[in-house]
Image (tube, rainbow over all chains, first blue to last red; front, side, top):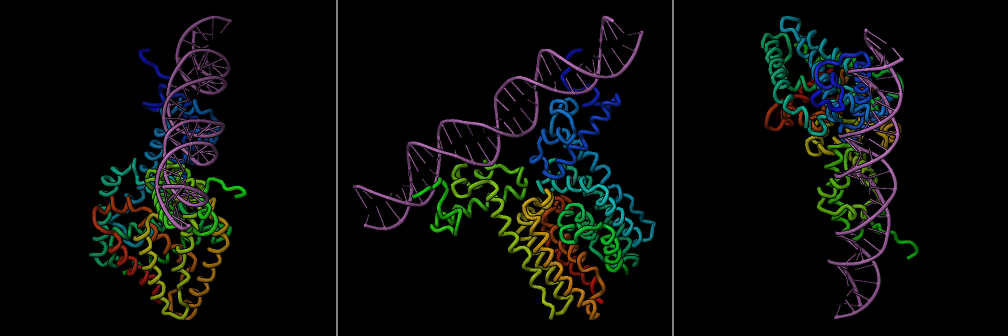
Length: 212
Length: 212
DNA sequence: ATTGAATTTGACCAATCGGTCAAAAGAACG
DNA sequence: CGTTCTTTTGACCGATTGGTCAAATTCAAT
């Protein structure tokens, strides 16, 4: 009672309860990802997302209070999973193999979740208005920790001397490029999966760069 | 006479004649670059561009027939200058130094014209609807030619064996990353110019990668 | 100063934007 | 079956979108 707005009760706060809620939220987020990743937040429209999801516009707003809420939901789940591979770097492991595994995992992400990569790219291009605080706190801290690990490896002579931060930037740039600039890559390369050749290329390159 | 629309006569077709036309077209393109590079074509609005340029919206449309015309004008001048450095690769030069010079020049472009880089990134992210034909023809051809040069160098043993196309992709990815993801880079790095350290880093990395 | 062209703008337009709401339609359960 | 809660939607809202247009202003050259 009290004040029940038109919004789904279980949808906004707490987890979705019924299976139809789960299904439709999934449908909407999938469609929103498709549209946001291509046109960015401002360039995307609710009508587009609604059409893509096969739902009516008011129905979208029954599950999410606003366009921004959809975007935030996507960014949140993205950030959670996006940087996990970096956290998986094991200081005890073999340095070169650890980094190569990270590169491989990151390239897999670009191949399997290119839209998520583009969603992130769009957000950054627009000045990261919604995730800047996160970048300056959590991400920055995570990078700093990883740099300690890398510096340790180089100090032990198990890794060629490298600027650790820019090494990380390099990995991000090289792997995400194949997702974010996929159109350009395939336009230049023609048909065929670019990721296989890219994987081999990156493996060789990083091996040369980092072998002591 | 005949049919003079409200559009500037010398502005649409041919080069701008009066200095006030030159100045205002410049003002508009500058503002349009600012807005388009941040929000992409769909996310940008004429009111935003008008405000940025300090002109009224109808005045914008006096110099350009449409929003799309502004975007096209920007993309065209961009494409002309963007790939010149690649054309400057000299098959007679020292392979490693030629490539390093290209990397340096590309990084300078990212530092001095980050908005142009982001404009391009936005266009690609949206599926390159306006420049795909160019990518599939001119760019593809240029890359193919460059690959011949690189393959020649490796065949002569003056360059470590590399997949030439993916080497080019790597250069693009690494240099443009500092322009397109500038917000993220500075968020992680804190204040200070990232380009100096990036330049040193890339120099070392590519030297290791490509020294036979 | 006057004229004729170039430039600027306020008012306006149809279409689309994100979002609201009451009412209809569908499920769930006795 | 009827009832209650959930889900869906058509109609609608004010604001903003890209773009038009006639009138007003400024400019350049006599």
